[in-house]
Length: 364
Ligand code: SF4
Image 1 (cartoon, rainbow, N blue to C red):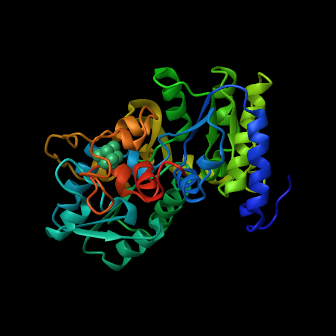
Image 2 (cartoon, rainbow, N blue to C red):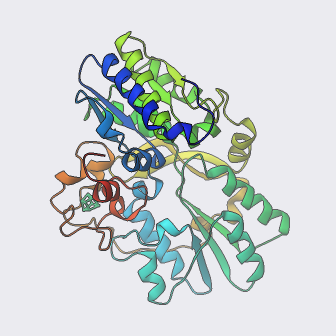
Image 3 (tube, rainbow, N blue to C red):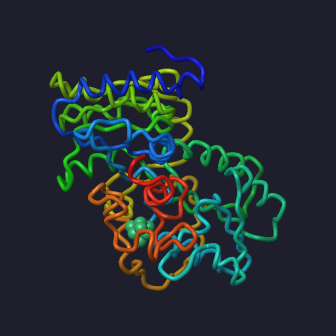
């Protein structure tokens, strides 16, 4: 099925054709996991679940960068924002996410100078225009945003800024997928691999998942027909006993990814172990600034001691992010926890699984 224009990727008749193909290709119960917040939203918004036969179960994994950021890291960001002369800038999605005691939004209401920016470059401009203050950019995201953060840091260096810092909690997606498989907590028969992340990293980083763990991977686009076609490709692999990395999203992803973006990312960052909400510490899954950029590292420049971390009582976001439960299985879902009064990040973020279930319901 060849599609070119966005309307074609949302065509109802074509979706039905794909749904029939999926039904024919579905031979046994399977769990397919998407690891991308944009996929999660698309699946809910377009009612993809409702088009699938009962044996095909979709699980949402740790694909929302805001959701996987730990309380400890949010607490540290709040502590950094509370330093004299500091302005902390971050993306809007992070503002409402509760840390152990409060969110950045609450810290701002209490007097901390916290700003929402639309890009890392905006935070460089803020630093340039407010040279008497220290500007810390709270960098949350996956491989998709890391190259843009790297470019912003290089711009700050070129401008000679000495008041620009980065607090990086950036994470890498493939190590988290492997951690999920290693834990054997949930059976995963196939991965719908993230599109935007794969634009940068290409298909190679998923090869160990397909070869070593025998789990088929399909890099899919975000329109409903992309997702359905990606599911059909996974079911074909499963039916034929293959486990390979295939690219459904060929209009956006090349097997080699974007080498320039990766070069930029690794010029500035190096890998480190990182803590994920729900998954704990995953080796080599985070990005920290290389030693030559230490002067820009907020963790080096500001010694903060946040209060002891605590988790939100009763919130099962960690289980949701591992695909162990669906949001309605959390006792707080749609009762104590709603998008208006969220208790955990999965209900706050527009890409959060709990927010998706709340808005669109289980039939989506
Ligand atoms: Fe956490 Fe709320 Fe989701 Fe429950 S419904 S897991 S409390 S975000």
